[in-house]
Image 1 (cartoon, rainbow over the protein chains, first blue to last red):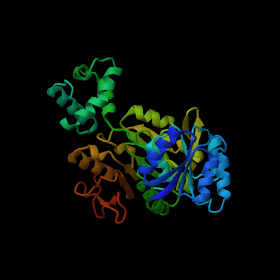
Image 2: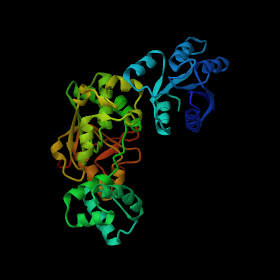
Image 3: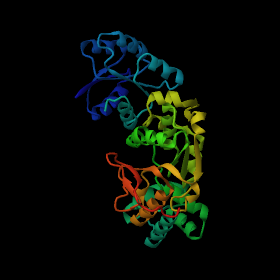
Image 4: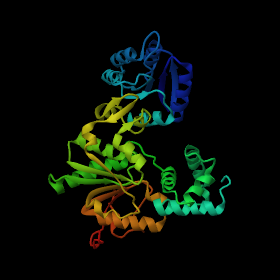
Length: 121
Length: 274
């Protein structure tokens, strides 16, 4: 099973997302902010990262920019998953190296569709 | 089924079938209840039965509303992927060469709220041609209005649509997203029922008619396929849904080998009068 890292400061969202992502055949790890996520990636690069934007300590965009500069950091498919739903945020995320973008609220159907678009399922 | 007398249920099924082709049997009672309950309340009736009574008294507006509520309008951008890959990799290149610059005529039959024709417009835009006119028809005026407006909710633009395509082909419009003007201009919408004569629509190079024949009985399927074949250019293509086929129903069409869901006119078959 492919590893997926779920990064969100909300435990509730992590739990919901984890359940959906596991149903898609991934094995999940969780991180509560960008710094924690970076630590997890340095230990083992996941195949997929589901990434919130607004988080304490290090936000999703800063995490993504750093990740792409790490050794092996180009490998994970990064799917943003955030309440930011304007064109400016979306294009900024894509420029920083995001592969897909989910606007919250999401459900299993949307996550599956976006994981498919990103070539993950 | 809640308290709808069998005779009234039969009347409802008969009327809906005559108008839409949709086959409703007793096993679809749950569908009737779940779709017509809310309609009855919205229309000021206490239950489904008085709604059907109004139909029986000849209220045409209620009949239209009932048909629209019972027909499935389910669709999303690039639904099922394969038909769009077929269009992009097989159909468009073949016709681009054959038509040598002439505008292609594409027809999305039962286009619902417009996601299918707009998906095709996106593909044509991305490939830089061939030049095409897309006609999108549906029997439901309400879904066509939505299709023409080309406004889609955040939920709708996240089903089947890659984020790069959202950025490239849509403008933000408040909480929703609107298909860009130059793509909207590629698509023309018209109300048309597959059960009625559609020969006035003219000859088509490509016809998409997906996930609609499944709702019809064999006789209706056969009749519609024969009339679709009559509209199709000699070297045109018909694309059906994954669980639909012409085999055993229509001799004028044949499956295109190696491409599931793609059909062409059968060689040597006289064209039926269109």
